[in-house]
Length: 481
Image (cartoon, rainbow, N blue to C red; front, top):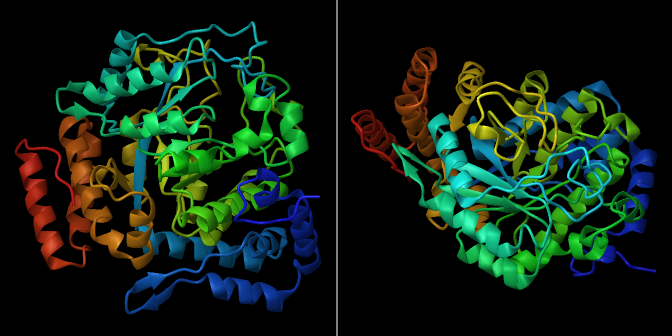
């Protein structure tokens, strides 16, 4: 029998099935215990100190109590608190990125993914380096500066050398005023040696979704291929950290297993990284299973409503206050609008989940990993964000200045990151407006920049930012704090 131990490097101990069951039982027993619930909410509130605003976050057990509670007033308090915490550490900026699918060759048998090796209905494709260049140029012409590269697991078609070559190609392309300044990587669990190679290649965040933390379900949903190994997959972040990658991103695929189980497991994984490595996840993603070639979401009976999804997003922000939270174009405009005020800090825009999709005039569907719900252009998404009071940010400054891992978290926890984030967001927004935006988006954006400049509290930073924005308008590029 495995014993729960967040400092263990064994998956069964830091994601402990018995601990999760005990947590869910405790949450059910206390979901109407208002004294306990009010105490948990009080603990989670941002606290102002001489060194800045701090948040204590919540344990997986405390957060699970709030998730189980169905009182509308408590839910409203959670939503309000999530917004306060997000504003305290990230302000009103939303970082923009796009996925780039390199190859859909895969040797795994994941039953929820159209890339699984038994799916004969999907066209298999792998980008050449020339095709990677064409895709990157198309993304740069939209205005993207940050990519998340994706590939199926196939040691013959997609070896680590292929991934490294693609990263090198992506960083090498300078088209007009465009440049990809940060490449995040979402590929299968691998070795410490390969993680070192990824670190040396200059990646940003290494992202790996757990899919489900329920071991029995995990093994049933991954019946064949290397991904069947639950321990190897779940322990990947520890190997990545050992390989020198200090920014890692977690996520589960909601809909595969009961959401309360997944929620507890996700927070336990974050607690494990903090306990062992001194720094939690850089990002947490919350994808929901979507329709794709040969994949019917209704075949999985654990789907969650939009209201439950919103509550999960809010509680992740409350429980893990310093971590970035990502919502992709899996979600519709309406759902993204619902959850943006609840702690989301990154979204994708104009995504195509097919291999080679960005160079096509019409969105191809024959190689898609999932159906894209929000199909607006990047210009439309940027304008929509601004009209809803959010600053679209194309910033990659922290990564390029070495503010990663524990250094980033120290700045975030002290509140000092706000001396960097808002001005960097405004400067990169100005670049977008000058180089890529429609006339209407430019009009909305210039008004936002004028307003938001005045909100920068540090006069010196504000004046430098204003001067840099003027220089960007005159043709200079790539300023950062």
